[in-house]
Image 1 (cartoon, rainbow, N blue to C red):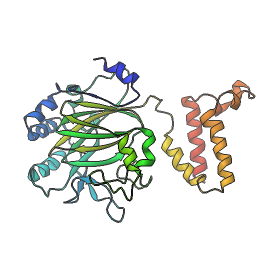
Image 2: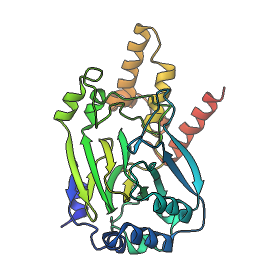
Image 3: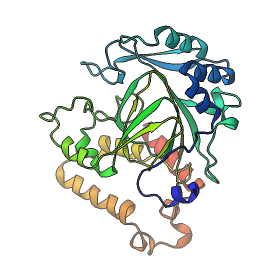
Image 4: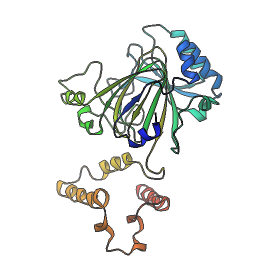
Length: 320
């Protein structure tokens, strides 16, 4: 299978069965969850890991409570201590969810990448581990492309196209469990009276049940709800952007626009919509043809230098 070609040409999600079945971590997990944890401990670095601990009875759903605070607490501990807690509560129905998200493979482990990785050609991905007990992570999306590999346990991905965001009933943009806006719908018990358009989202959903060794590719900005279905689950994912790292984050621009444009009078908002179309979404010769090529500044195609100038200008303006 030419994974590089499939990733390069993909415009929708796809599953690759058995992509990482040969990994030593996968083989350890097939023997037992404790063997998988022992394997990870042999490679971990001696430092504090960030861990989320859910409330008992939450069913592993890391979400909001009734007051829109997080229904889990965050702590830092060594990996042996975290795994000891998982060992002690293994098999208990009332055990709280224990979840370690977005753990940088290179920073927190030694030798793990060398023995367990997917060659991704000239891409420069961020490699992260997601580990813990049974969990439910609300539907969200990510700016980069995502190749998610199940190393231990089982995962269920429910994936939606980008344009389904309005049917997912998104929550706050600034008060989120992990920095990304999430769907407010409980996928295990959807309230169609409160969220009627969610039926439309489900008509566009794709569900992938993955066993250890399987992988799924999720294109940038596609929405995905993720469940850890086994008593212990480990996923290793790769994120990479098709755009340079020095470009800004679109979410930052959207959030700033909420502050600066959303509550303007209607006629002014219409003007700014036209300005965004002119400078951002349409662009082209109509924007710059009348300006000498060497004087177009940030209206010229972006470079690392011009992006840095824009960033500096924005920081100066926002600090006023």
